[in-house]
Length: 569
Ligand SMILES: *[C@@H]1O[C@H](CO)[C@@H](O)[C@H](O)[C@H]1NC(C)=O
Ligand SMILES: *[C@@H]1O[C@H](CO)[C@@H](O)[C@H](O)[C@H]1NC(C)=O
Ligand SMILES: *[C@@H]1O[C@H](CO)[C@@H](O)[C@H](O)[C@H]1NC(C)=O
Ligand SMILES: *[C@@H]1O[C@H](CO)[C@@H](O)[C@H](O)[C@H]1NC(C)=O
Figure 1 (tube, rainbow, N blue to C red):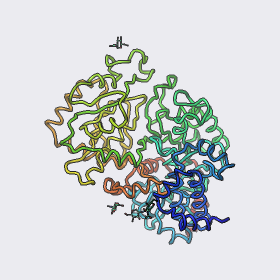
Figure 2: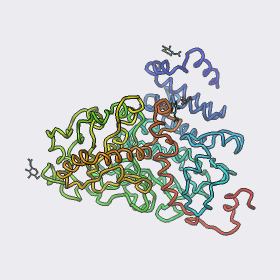
Figure 3: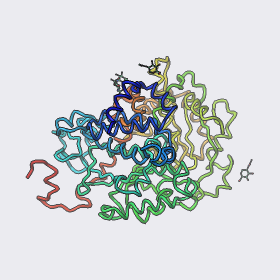
Figure 4: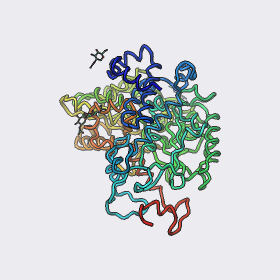
């Protein structure tokens, strides 16, 4: 009730607009600070009605609570007895902010149109996102009216997505805890895509008109951080989360609308793919659309011999690299002429999946399918930088001082190292360091891996993919390429520059790292970052899967038709 008074006191007397000061205070009383900021953001959103001001306050919450695992946060808050906040409450506010950012504000379409959504997209921008993509046979002329709000009266996008709401589904709440915490890792697209669809004008809150149903969950993060679901880490299929997914679907009014969950969307962030978190997915949602990083198999799941990725229905997505890492990689880059190393790889040797051959028969470099061992056996070759068990920073150094970066298969096919290669060296050129600062060229040694977005970008222009069993010939090939075909090297790097923006998941403006991104020169790296990024790529690919006539009833004069074109009836 006194929150406005407290707000004034905090800003005027305690100077908590000063970020340095806030950081100092966070070391003294972290949860006190998070509680205050939570209530400010809450007031600004729900009482004052200012989405932007609320987002500003929430960024602090995001920064300070994001360091804590949601279970730890609840424990530290004494489960509501010491501090009046909970991980669920913070997540709920985050979602409310993102939803409100779509169009944003009050006052009808005119006012709504002045705002960008949380991912920096203006109504006009949205028509560019779709560009020539008109999956449902729209007329080809440009949209006459810009649209952008998932509110009644606003013209429709190509398709509409209903996002299941954890606030009203307890089982889903358990699966989506800790957005601020979970988005920090390489599986952070689980959170990022949830955020994207909440803030997308394609979101609808009316399930009747939805083409797709998005089922949010952060299981890659929560299972990888081991203690949330009992008995679950990445070594076995997870019973508790499987049970929760089943509860979510069996309580859903929409799940049975079409066969096999065909209009449902899930994001699977890690090598565990769908099988680890949702072991019974083949029974429940065999037709659902998966947005996933992993096209292949996860070594620890010996019994899973069929990938959960299905090429014609699913969408492969990049791993998430944090803004910090992008900036870090950029700063460490060396100019090409100082790149003394031909190729780089640091990592542990791995056998192939047990369904390919028994792992005990493929433990060393005598086995070509243990491609990492084959690479590591080349240690000592002065042109290569290969090693095992060295500090993380070595790995960054290697990325930024080599001409080529090897991306061999690991515990599964996808690896965030592939995506890192595109960002090493990016920013250096803007820090006015002389020379040609470009990232290393990725060399995939990973026969069954498919980089994301091959539908949109020309991968062979930017990436080398070489058969795993031919590594000996590879080194000679690369030497020759460098010496004899420097034009081709330049082309490969240039194409990588184009590609990398599509592989970025820029933060939304409810995140602290959005400020860092705004300050950094990421916009020079990727000038149209808000129109050319992984979200937009995913959205375009999803558009091709939407069809007006699918999974619904229709006839001339139907109510849904009237909704479609305001004023038509
Ligand atoms: C912010 O706070 C720090 C530490 O308390 C102080 O040194 C600095 O001068 C303050 N900056 C401004 C702009 O007030
Ligand atoms: C390499 O692995 C094979 C098959 O497992 C084994 O027979 C051989 O002794 C190993 N070589 C070395 C040097 O360890
Ligand atoms: C983001 O950057 C722009 C351009 O430098 C600046 O005008 C704006 O104030 C920044 N926004 C925030 C919230 O820092
Ligand atoms: C990029 O961001 C910087 C810092 O916010 C700003 O000064 C600059 O004008 C921006 N450049 C472009 C091309 O938008």
